[in-house]
Image: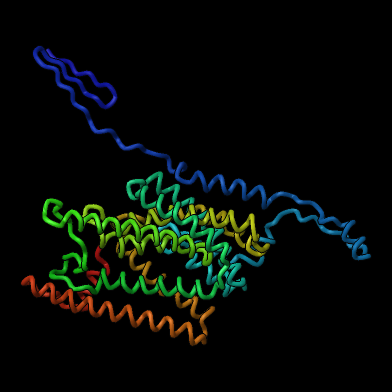
Length: 422
């Protein structure tokens, strides 16, 4: 005679001569879809209260006395017209910008800054302030969604380092108050050049077969028991952590002066720094770096916003433009974070390439124009990068041949296959 007793996920089977306990795997927690957007709902409730609040007349008696007139101010009633009469183009633009912020390492600033300066007429400093303020809402809403549903993509040590070390970078950037053009030019060039390198590694780098990993000068997992291997491995890890601190500080500095930067610094460092210095088992995937960059950018945007608002302040135009868009991005950015799946990795890479180029083109049209010095700096850096990549291509091809393999010829079919590969 036997009897089965089920308690939660534990199944216990009893018989005359044995007792067997079977532990069934726990079912995944099913969260309501409403829970995913709780920060968005909270933000919208506060936003509606402020926008729809009846403010009453604007001190009609005081105005009439000061201006010796019989002017009677109309009640403001709501801020609806103040927010959307002049800033509705930004509201529409941030539909795409918020999705970009949650799904790529560039953030919504790639859309916010050009629209603010080109269409709305903001000064560069105002565009910078709006960029960092809107990311405070959107990126943190996306970070909440990632922590809730995709926490396995996040690395706490990476996030903590880029946040804690990035804060001094933010504070120094705010204190120095450098001329914005030079800092923004440096950032734009770095983003574009990184896109070139990233495209080369994923699409053009020599491979011994269509499905092979790109031939890059990577450090393979080492055997600590071999002579000299342990010190080599320790040296690589020291270099990886030291460069992480430098990238974290630079990201914070750029965020303070440009409105964005920590996200792209984390992403670029992860691919071209950490992943080339550490053993294969400790490397980060594209989606993990993107998810972590969203969290870091949200936190440092909040720090930058608080410091700037409580010190130098921001213009009324920036406040109104922020009010016209904050209710939207707190929904759009979390929706964008849901795109961080392995199946969409290729599409997100393509979006990254397009946005990096579009960001530089927009900056060139808005700010560089006929500045010969800026174009010379861009041309010099680009020439250096392309020379390095050409040398890498030649050396990697020779390395494959020495191993007895043959590099795959770069054809249009091969390019499409690599570009669309998940």
